[in-house]
Image (cartoon, rainbow, N blue to C red; front, side):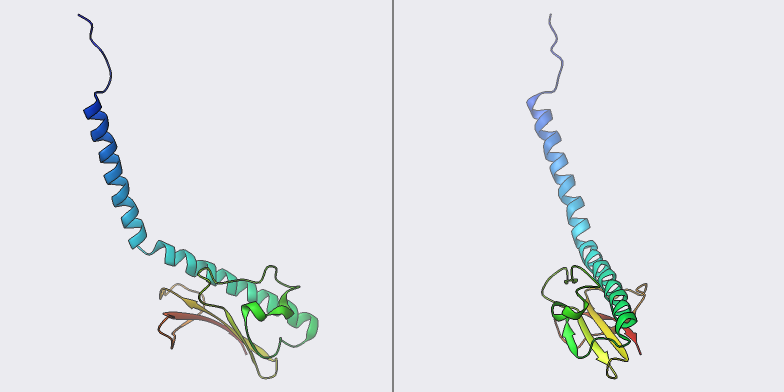
Length: 140
């Protein structure tokens, strides 16, 4: 009597089905937990810190911060200090820069998706419905 070793077709199908259901549950938990939003907010915070560094380097060379109110795309005066210019991960929002007191100070702002108390910036509620929270760095 020869005995064949191995899995039957039914056993293989049940195993594949079980793995598919388990992976779907895990992916659903990861997506609903807001990990993507946290990652984008971390990128925004990093970009703001890079902008701050570029602004301080600009100030060291020119003894004044760039003038005016501009979006990150238009911060061409900083192009030699930060390459590439940061862009919001969703590309629907933008970083903003505002000069304070004729170039004596500045405010840079990013729109955050989550309110997190561990951000190293001033977090405030934004006015627009598209923007949940703002992360603001200032240098008066």
